[in-house]
Image (cartoon, rainbow, N blue to C red; front, side, top):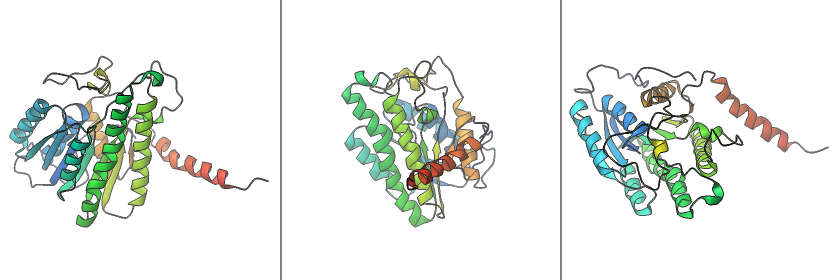
Length: 287
């Protein structure tokens, strides 16, 4: 898929007034909203008329973003300070997600925990699994029932191109066994859920960005990057706005797997064909 430009999300709402005076679209819940893709996506949704619920660990970052979105778009913005690796915090956010008003869920929170698997701290391993897998699954479950009852809704789960890295060696890729494994689960979970919900009014997407110009690589995830200003790691990467553009364009076109910057969509389409061929071949009786 080529990287899309523009902000149209396929729902017929355009406009260039920064969101002020625009009809309310509903409420979107965004995790990992304190920086990077989460902050940029939340800003885009607010500009389109969505009220937002911003979830992350850094209270001041969230309050800064909330104040800006209220001033620029006139939308309602709620802040939920939570560490999704903590069961109590996840339960609070899941309760909010299940309140019945969430029409758009962006599961963006994630931590990398890069490093040699044999040296990975057990506490960090659990944290990675809780944030990257358990929280995504629990929050998706929390919103889907209400979306089906109301006849519409969107879920975007952020994975990574590293979900497809498989046995590629580290250097220049990071040592990533657990992180890539969690993102592979997010890809499979989202694709399978989308197939299960085919024919319903729900839109389901897994967003798989590559290297992105954020501060993601500045922390392994034990603690967030400090300070009120967003940072960008030295390796640069795709601007976050282009990642959001690609995701919204893919939603408008009904594509489940979005890989920003991918020039040949047939590569993604080939996943299903390869999987079917493997299952069909493995199911044949041996001569």
